[in-house]
Structure formats: C-alpha cells, structure tokens
Image (cartoon, rainbow, N blue to C red):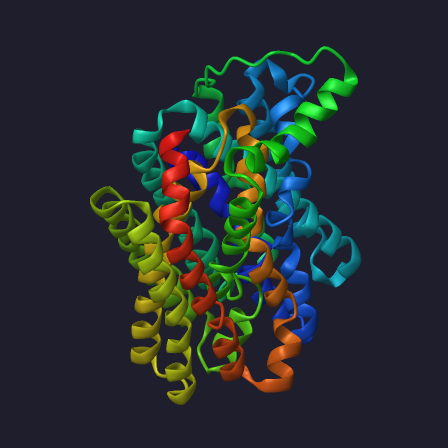
Length: 405
C-alpha cells in the first residue's frame, strides 16, 4: 500500500498544481491555466468507467488478476503519458492538453484500482492502518512531484523533470508485479444484459436499497458539500497565487510541498488516531470545520506579501488540517460501500466528494480575476455551515442503519 499510494500521488500534481507552474512560465493567461490544470476533473468523473474495473478483465493484463491487471494497465498509461507530455511541451498546446487529460484519466483509473484493492485485501478493522500507510506513500509522491520538481525547475527544463517523474513510476510497477491478488469470489453474469445490469444499474440501486431513498439522498448531498473548501484549492489556482505573492519556485517548493507535505503526514496520523479513539463521526465533523476554516489563513498571507514566516505558518495550518480530514473521510466512504460493487461504489462516492470543489476550481481563474484572491478564499469556505449541519443530522441515522446491516 505504501508503493500503491506513491503511484496514486505522483500524477496528481503533475496534471494540476505543478503543471500550472510550467504553463505560467510559458506565458499562458491565468484563466486558461486553471482550465487546463483542471484536467484533474477526471478524478471526479472516474465513476463513469468504474464498472469496467468491477466486471471486465483486460486481455493480457488479466493474468495478474482483476485488480492488479487494471492497476498495471493504468500505471503504464501514466508512465507513457508523462513521457509524452515531456516530448510535446506546452509549445504544442492542443496535443499537450490531450495527453495531460489522458494522464489524468489513467491516474484516476489507478486510484480506483488501488481503492478497490485496499478494501478487498483486508477486513474493516485493518483499513485504518492501510489508509495511513497509503497516505504516507501518497504524500511522499507529492513531495517528489511538488517540492522536488519545483526546486529542479530552477535548474533544468520541465521536460526533463517530467521524464524523471515517469521513471519514478517504475517503482510501484515492480511493487504491483510482486503483490498478491485479493481473494474475492465473483459470479460471472449469465448474459450480456445481466452483465450490464450488474455493472451499471445494481451498484447504484444497491446504495439506495440499503439506506432507503430519503436518507441516501441527504447522505449524497452531504458528500457533495463537505470537501468543497479543500478541493477548490487543489487545481491550478494556488500556483499562480504563490508566484503573485512574490515567492520563488524554490521557496514555494520547500515550504508548500516539502515542509507542508510532512506536516500533512502528521495530520494524517492524527486523523487516524482520532478515528481509532473517538470513531468516524466525531472525527469527521471536527475535520470538516477546522479544514474548511483553514482556507481563511490565506487572507493573512495576502496581507503579508512575500513573508516566508507567514507562508510557513499558513501552510502548517492548512496541511495539518487537510491531512487530519483524510482518514475520517476514507473511513466514512468505505463504510458505505458494498463489497460486491467495491470499485464502482467507492469511485462514485469519492467522485461526488471531489466534484463540486473541482468545478469551483475550474472557474477559479475567472472568479479571482473578477473579485480577487481574498474573495475566492472566502467563497471556498461557505460550504462549511450546511455540511456541518448535515453531518449532525446524518450521524445518528446512518449509524443506526449501519449497525443493522
């Protein structure tokens, strides 16, 4: 799970935040940067092809098993795509954007395969340890694709950096070849129609059948809202923001990517400890409030243009709370999944978590151009109140249903 977490984290910044620096240096305007860097929207739409991972074995790759076969296919896609980005460069913008989107799609596919593998490889009481280990690998990849890439960008061309990132994918590929396939029995459908029903219709109806329509509907609304503050800052808006605040790429890489990622790892283990000590719901409610509120720290940075001390404090608060939110979120979503439809249901739920914030991030450049950075950060926090109220309403109701299942 450490290496699989590394594989999932590596392409994430390379099609979003890190990519935005490359685009900015090419003189591309802010509005276009946030739109191109929103290729990561594929991560929020991955549920559209998630049924394939549950019900279709890839030719040749199926020799590794259903989960590992899809994972290897996605890993190779990410590797080849990063090499293509290095070869094309933003000078050939249209094909470059197409390849960037392909990398995002393969990265999202990789995430789904890893999530399904994690849920199926161990029982629920061991998921916390797996999530923490996965998160450590994920954040180590963020250090490489974020901090290390930015520092290197002051000394070498971006194309060389992307080639190096592609080479780093060889490590999780080897780990995949050495891993074991989860033992999950699955009955083959009797016909094509049955296959379509089991892969597309049943996973969606199953959720509403288990939780009933009113409660399921409110739960989905909550899922759409509670990570908007975090996801609205994931896309391409933060990279130009740091540059506009007067920081060099080396300073940004060292503080936001290197130092910040280690602070995030501390937050992850604090979040895991909170789930173990107090349970999912209290930890999730606390994380929603403190993580969303941390976006307002950037108003302090705007008032202290170019201050490394303030940047360090802001990044400390933002990354600590962001890391803390991770384990309660994964534990909450995993508790809603039926193992007969692992990849499809988890992909759908995790996509819904990320989609609204990514949509907001897509328009971030236009919003900032019209209102300024400060107003944008305030807007990203507005989802906290309804999300917290829905959390309090769902807490006893979903707990009763889950204890009865």
